[in-house]
Length: 253
Image 1 (cartoon, rainbow, N blue to C red):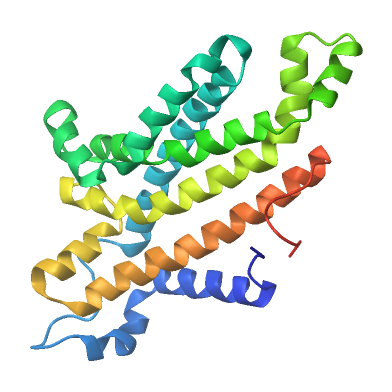
Image 2: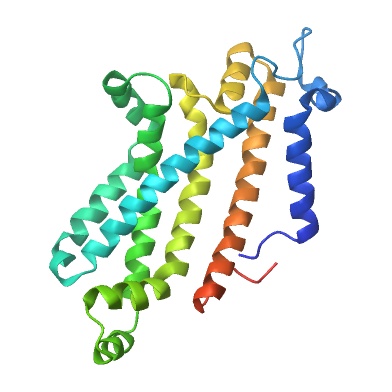
């Protein structure tokens, strides 16, 4: 998939920044979606602070998922860990198929309300794409390349970090990109357990039957997801160029 055209990318960033900085300026846009004198713009919390908290939660969960899934992917693609590959995939699959709301319900009694149960749910939900892509990237490294590295005197650790991981990195980054974007939308459920984020706006809209609030929360999350996906594509291409490996992120912007 190609990235956004540069003009559309800049326009999206400018629109998002303008709305988060001065949401009341957009009141005429959302006013038609209110009734009975309801406010058109959510003002109970700063939208910019909610967006920042939302991204922070997603970023923390993505970092934890990436570290764990990549380490696990390396382990199960080594000769001594191959037998654990089916079990690892099954566990990661359960993490994604188990509804995040159910994870929150189980986690809240253990860790309380707030960001912690949300991080647990997003961590589990984000594992599978990264694990699958880590395994695919490492397993697709040609045996001839590994043999050549061994013939040059590299030990197993050197072959992994100097040969296999650079070649697998574009595929791994693709999994990270998919996982992060999925979790950006999923993180809205965190507001049901008092976690700060843009889900707060959506929940407030549902509770008050205010369509304008629902649209604000949904549109901001959607635009952030598109821009995040595009930004990670650009990052993936640049890392691939640095490593001299083919990118899976489409053409250059």
